[in-house]
Length: 495
Image 1 (cartoon, rainbow, N blue to C red):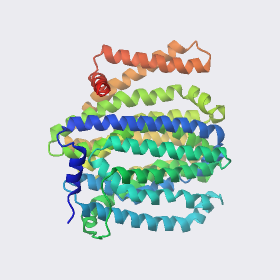
Image 2: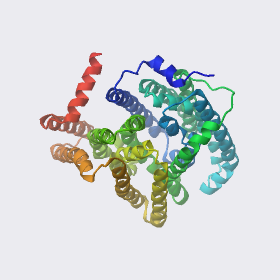
Image 3: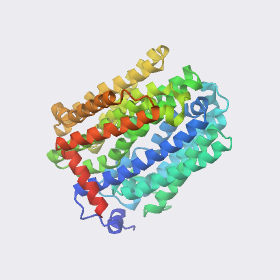
Image 4: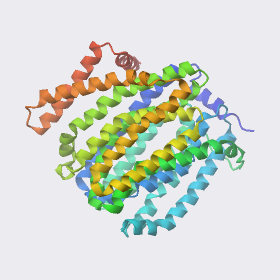
């Protein structure tokens, strides 16, 4: 018999006396550090890559993004959320998930390996045969760290996850830079991705005090399967939805144009991922823990919405505001065509964490059927719309993509209202003050910096003036979210 993994971890990390609020704050803190450092590293290395590589290089790898997204969803099998939702977990549960995910990923890699010529034929690029076969190693390697990641997530070990994510990103990107500087071009991007999977998986094994055994008992899989399979199907459709633009561009447009879209999407994602990843790391575990008290869960959910609005609107709207200067200064004017794409995607990126939090609440209540149906419908709407609009150009497709997702927030709200009684007025009250302040600040900043002609000075002044104005307004209006955030950071600094 194996001792409970939960008990072993409680002893190791000594978190049993922490309140839910303290766990959430700690999770947000370390999630913020992890996400912030990763976005900074991604930006720094992204500058190097974008200055050396061409649109065609990015387009070559970008067209494979839909396959990587789908593979990662099937690889994970929805079992991360299933494990987090379980109240009592034993070694047998983790062991069954480990071997199931590893076996499924092995079969999936073999399928993709032999289908590589068909992928190359679809995109009319013979080089994609070898490229895809190497790139797809990433999800096969990553399958061996899924259980360890779920264990760290369930216990909200965000400090350890931060170390894993930052180290993996740093080491893999260093390898990518070395390869690119030695003339390997887009192969540098491919091996950087594979190296990330290797390092992240190795570190998850190091930090998570759990090892698989050769005792095969798949009974826990049968118990979790009805819940997890719906998440897999949902994740599959979600990945198709998220990457449908890249896929259609790769089929109907040139690699050059795909590269412009990929670059614009990359920089907007750097901003949206900061908040979105923080919330994803804590939302489900925290909401699951409060499942037995509807009022308490609604209170927590609204607090999350306020935190998102406080961070996301100034960060993403601000990123769109400085995009022209940022792109030209950092990665040169050869990427000018990506600026408008980046700005549009930043608008949706500001709302993406809200979208994610809605879905996390639905999952926390075990409503994977609602999650699946909703995602299938929006996926179908997006696909039909974009297939109709692709002939009108990239910007029209991007705008349509954003509008559909924004409208669908109301659909998610309908289900969340049924689960916790959240009213639309609650959402408006929680997020729109921060949105209004952000727009006011950016408008004032635009007027103040209008006379500045030097592009470098303009970027610095735009950022500086906007930050000063936003912080000043938060202090003058006695923003509770601002005060709590500052107090928590000062407390961590004193420690």
